[in-house]
Length: 437
Ligand code: CA
Image 1: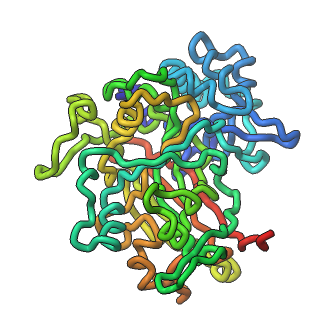
Image 2 (image 1 turned 135 degrees about the vertical axis):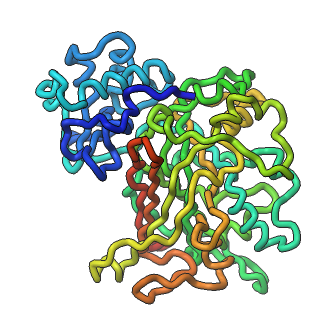
């Protein structure tokens, strides 16, 4: 696990005014991303407050040395894959250098200020070229809630507490926050109908997930040991695994999700680094009655700090709410504490058969519902399987998403003695279905 150093000191502040109190992007965060300016050319940046710092420009400035220079150069083109591939050494060196250049009273303020651009003047893009996307199912309360809808007596299947369940998702339709989602068509079959019909989904849903960006690769045929797993992680984001529940119910047996999921996945644009999240590690724990993980998924070091404590929230805004000037309303509050398997365990399990992960691969945690009412990570759960609509503050009700609805995922890491950091938004609005050709 990453050790704490001066870059985590909550007393240090940046000379960038918008990174002050209340910002999700203070000096202690420093996430990476990719943006495009007016000419449309993408380039790598680090975010501080409401500004982005041009990493290619920084690499040419002469302000960096050695490892940090290597990392900034790797991040200077249109994707962060090369930076991800470098791993934690150069990435952490660049973080330390950035911190020293952005902290109050640095002698380099004037030089660095010329490399900053207000966020409002750039387009924010996907941070990496995604080779493969894998979605897991580690939210045990979600698994139990969904299982209970289908198998009230036996909600969790017997493999759940032994194997991190996952499936291979669709990388080509992962889009960055802000991109609308078009309501997809699919085969729908009412239980009493003799045959399905092709129609726009009537049960469009979100899933609140943590996303993980893979860093250095493992060679095909070479599993990653649990204590090396963290070194293969480049960073974290929020991920919305859009789901068409009626399509899913009809198509999922026997091979699992397919077109009910592959029409779109939305991620937040900022790559929150493992270094930034170091103050928010928590022990990996299991209830006494649960089986201990098999030895390849277990180690003393992993038990000590394998978990993450990040507060999660989902907000909904309808067309009427926006017309009336109402703020988005929170419909779910949850936490990454509800992951039954840690991210390190996902990496180790994913590679345990020799499967090779590559820089820029994306993992989804699975829906992170909490144990209580109001902490469910999908509308399917919030509405009791589509039987009891939720009521919004203005009296509107929702069972599933309607056209024009906007879903916003948020994440925040905070604890006493550490600077609070946020993930930014993972937001998308539902566009009406196309006229089928
Ligand atoms: Ca999912």
